[in-house]
Amino acid sequence: MVTAFITLEATDGPGLAATLAQAAPMLTPAKGYRGHKLVRGVELPNRYVLLVDWDQVDDHMTWMGVNESAFLGAIGSFIAGPPDIKHYAPAA
Image (cartoon, rainbow, N blue to C red; front, side, top):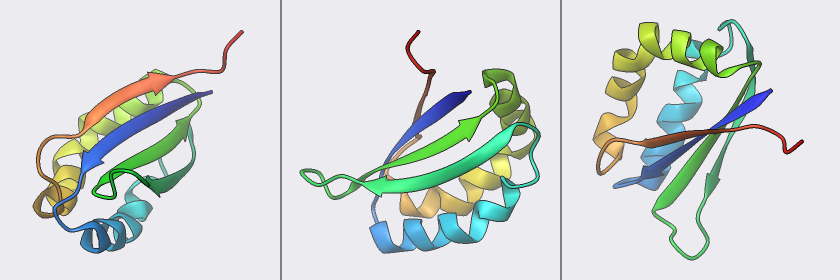
């Protein structure tokens, strides 16, 4: 399993959280999708991290290839710039 860490700088945190909740159905039927959660920075309250668990990186990249425009279109007005996306796997 891998986790996509998607860092977002919010211009409207409550709007971002509400829109991500509405956009969740875009993720749930995806091949390899295992779950997600949104966390907010304590020291930097406008920074959010969306954690999305996938079976493998290819599952996430395939989903992004089809859904990236719609997903970013949904949240674009609530963030200051493009998200930073990194993938992490459990340590051996």
